[in-house]
Image (tube, rainbow, N blue to C red; front, side):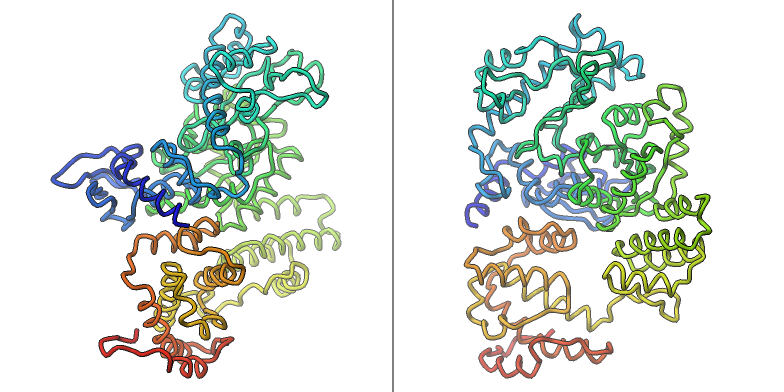
Length: 603
């Protein structure tokens, strides 16, 4: 997509790398470089440097490096499209069409909607200071929310007067279409005049990682009209391009800084907006919450990216689920846990006393106990196993069987063979079920492959031998060359059309390139970064994005020529041999069409 390439280049021309980095890191100039404390690992002496003229950053302590996009994506935990959107906002540029799939609304309407949200945020904040909002202020005071914390989170008040917000937006020349797109007003199904969506409610602005307001979550007060009529406690902005609930976490705008300021704390996930505010107030500044929706894979991937940025030794890289102990809370913990585990996140659980939530405990002066519960959180499977073991009827074989089935489901969810083995031993010990029986359940019930058997050394072997590492590098070079110049494919079509790779990342991206070619779609590096959500794939794509291929077709030729020998070396060092869909004999025969230059060196 040439338009996207142009957009990225113009973005870098408008925004200097030091301007982007300085939003997060305090920089000091020394010569032609800027220095600061690295945001990716804990340090006391600056080893993080920025070269404005080159447009790159580099940390000599942890090795992290890259450009504007790399820095924002890593520090904010954003996807590639979300990173482009944030940088585009900073530069005052609109994203090219199609960067966000499904976002087809008119750019002018979107811009008007964003303006409406900014106006509404200020209006709600000012309304909270009005005489009418005394009840709301008393409520916040009674729950223990300080004025400073209310300001930090931008809390506000929507007056009871109907049409209040509509009038303000009209005065500021916001169109009705823009107000509706922002979710601040709606047109009744039966017709009639447009109405304010929020009234007589405490307002929580929902912001993205750049601090921009995306929508609102509105809570009724005790004794209000909404409560008397049995309306929902919370009303959220409607789902839409500007407010994608499955990707939004309340408090995400404060989370990256919280993780940097408190490297001793885990990331905490709770249920309610008010819980987040009060947990921040007692020092748990690494707390976020989902917005009244099921915890999604998008949420989990975002959290995983942020935790992966915590590279310093001894810094916690796990999530603590701090949820109510009622049935709903336990179900929410299990559901969120499964999603997080499936994305490779280490998950712990800290359930609260019966009938309590974090806000209640803080209000009643139990902050110290709450902090202790977070510190002493338990492994999520250990928590689930204990729940089964403590049942009165646990000794009944059918109950044990159900517990074992759940344990098998958890074990089959994890991406880590080491964690799977640990959980297998734990479940076997606590449930009194043999490891063999659990392995059988995992194979037959979940459809997953069996948990890896232990090697003689006691752990599954996961390291690559040197020849295998060279093969992976060779395979990735082939894919990188195809991404750099998709037009090179026809030159080696007889080889590429039947090729498979041993490296999972190379294979995933190669199949995507192949599918694009088959369906007549455009491919290329930037488009690949828009297509994938897998963090491993994205990390590799981000690395090669910064490389320069003077002659991609020549690089592809050399890499294909090196492949048979590298495959053979890797096969000799590892048994059983890897099966290929196209044999090396076929490759060698096809390579008669490839002429190696005398100065070429086979890897």
